[in-house]
Image 1 (cartoon, rainbow, N blue to C red):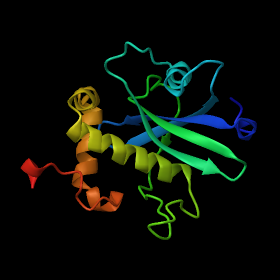
Image 2 (image 1 turned 135 degrees about the horizontal axis):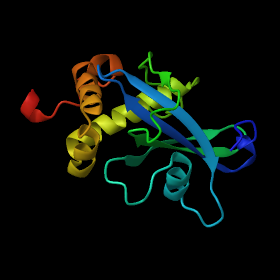
Image 3 (image 1 turned 180 degrees about the vertical axis):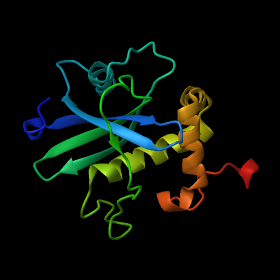
Image 4 (image 1 turned 90 degrees about the horizontal axis):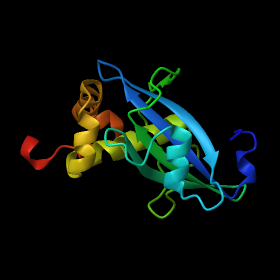
Length: 170
């Protein structure tokens, strides 16, 4: 979908295609699409991301949603690893999570794509530790395993204060 026109649909699907390099640094591509007639968000992500429903080494996971003032809901999905790793990607250099001002106002005042990517990676890092199927898929590749290990090691800069470490590692 043309991003300039994405605000015209009531629901858009944002796809963050994630990859890690051999030293564990993260990179992403962002694709935005709309739902086809009768298409579920999962199906739209697989279509736009180039993933089949039978894929066992690529994780497709909904990580968040947000409301835009134009009256649109944006569903965000992470796809990892990026099935088209040969395409140019953006290095994630700022691992800042966006936060609301108070507990009862969770929507941040400013939200950048990098904040959404950091949130998606934190979400996947949690699943690596808590979901055996997702964990096996995301750590099969050595670069991804190194990337998720770096997220656990550097949990404080991610804003999770060590919350990703399982009890056996404490």
